[in-house]
View: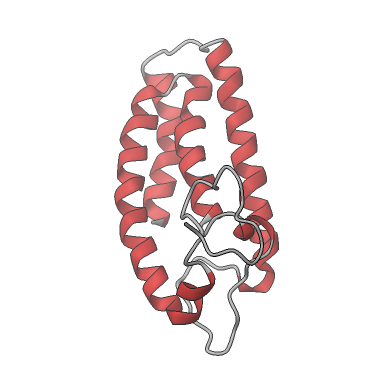
Length: 149
């Protein structure tokens, strides 16, 4: 994953330079806003996890799942931030190919990573997040005390 993310950052710089892409105007500014928002979400997720945040899949027996911050709404806010970053960052300077190709590659990596991570975190995690979507929050949260539909 580290090599893939490094290649992504290099491609973000090289594509606009090598293909002489002009600044895309409004799309560039919207993409800049999206990239900034993705970083805000990333740091919210990381700060919520605190000492538990790392890049490896580590299961700590007896540790309760973190369900505060953005984890109140979705299971994987940091991965949502990465998905947004892969979509928006290259588009700031017209890197359409980078956005498409690396987003597809990232989808494959996240598919494997999330399956492994959720399995490693075990039954307590599964129970705590059973009714939370992986990536997109529900429009309206369930009222307390009522089972989900």
